[in-house]
Image 1 (tube, rainbow, N blue to C red):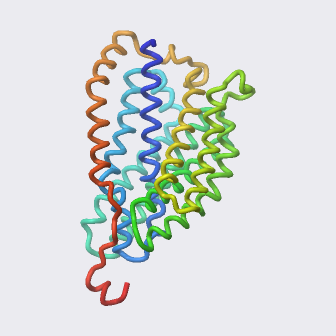
Image 2 (cartoon, rainbow, N blue to C red):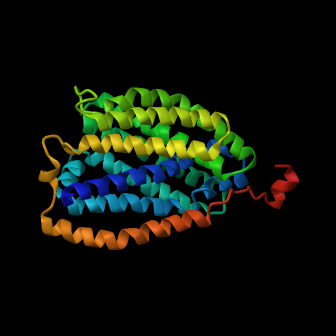
Image 3 (cartoon, one colour):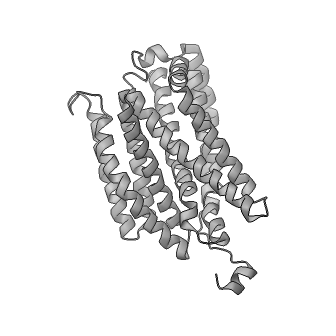
Length: 318
């Protein structure tokens, strides 16, 4: 395998991992007010992502850094063409991070409401814009960007709701399941419309079998995830929504492998052989440690969360 192909696969893996892991972070952040009725439940909901959300963002940093080193022309073209939406993504991530970090340090309800607003807005904005950016990159139209944004926003909301149902107990878990079904009413039709549009325009199955297979499989797996959610199979439902995101990423990057930017091939976007060779050695040494550490983190925090009711809330019957 050529190093150019190898690093394109690595970058596709990093972006897809980011969408899977940060996808449920975005979903939890967007839905946190709807899933909780008091401060104890709000802490329960946000506690599902508390130990992992900042680690999940490392996937974005690594993906962008790998693009800069391995495919500088692709990196430059993407950031130049989509400068404004990507800056808004960055603003959203900063606002969300500030909200998550400060929320546990403020003592007044009004201050916590501002933090909650920042968490919701800072989750919803990147969730929409990532889908819009990649859809526009593929099709170059405002309609495609809108459909892609609606798909990513609703899919991440569904993914996050299923994750909360998997990680919590009691009323929050029940609300999360209802929220997942509500999000699926948008996500599934959006997937039916958007995902078959990922393969190259004007090509049939014979010309682009992998993008078509991945896109159609993503729709099928997403539908299965909705059915599993309705049946209360939280673990399998989360596996299905994560798999749908993985298959969507596979369809996206197999399509981009022909031309990551309009008029630019992967070979034209790549760095020289020496740079790619050095990156390969660095990646082979560092990547296993990063993956191992994050896997260990999820294993340590694998248990369900229970809302901690404070004494004033207990006396009030909350």
